[in-house]
Amino acid sequence: MNEIRKQRIHDLLKKGIEHGDASAVTVVDEKQYKQHNPMTKEGDIGLAELFARLAKTNPHVEIIRIFSDGDYVFAHTEYDFSSVKICFEVFRFEGEKTVEHWDNLQLKQPPNASGHSMVDGATEVTDLEATKRNRDTVESFIQEVLIAGDIPALPGYFDKDHYTEHSPEQDDDINNLIKALSAKMSDGKPCIHYQAFHRTLAEGNFVLAVCEGYRNGTHSAFYDLFRLENGKIVEHWDTVEAIPPREIWNNQNGKF
Image (cartoon, rainbow, N blue to C red; front, side):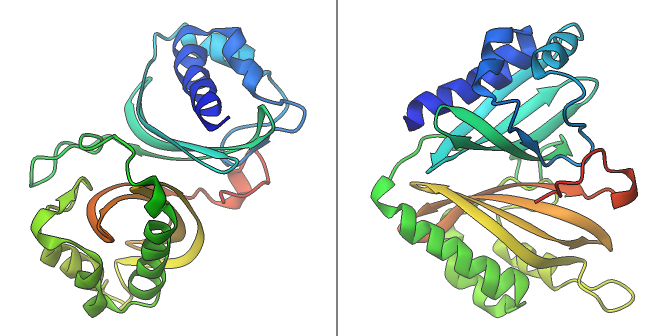
């Protein structure tokens, strides 16, 4: 079932958006579908019609990684519409249909100081038996280090000698990550401030964490994808997106 769901989401994103294939949209239960992108309207236009319209703009969609966790399928994607954006897509299923959707997008940036792009790196799912352990490790890291602010505990979660960082403003040296998480704004508040932890989704050696907080004073959504080996974080990708003010939202379902 999970592999079938992955394929249908792959087809929804690739065939539906890129080619306007109406059959790809049948995976969506449009009567129940709940949209969490605050800037996307609900109910006023069918997805098949929307995708057909997008296809006329000659978009390019690349699904870099795709995973499943229970009733969820989550994907790491690159979209080229009028601009190139990196995105995490999350879909919740009921039976054969997806009924709920979240995403987080960021403009694609040049390779970071270590030469890594926002999407390159490992893609193969392994260590399925370690899914729970890896999820627990990431949840502990989020709570202890990113939310509670225990920065000295950070090195214990990483394999610093085999670490690959894909965040555009960081590099492979975790000491620079420690500096970034320790940095303060002029008012004394952290430049990067994780405040709420919404969910983790995991398959084998990959764990996606969905959090909320502030970056340089801007209310933001943080989507962080981690790859683990032997219980340690060895690779990281992310997208950070500013959350628009509620008064301009096109639906009231909430970002999370």
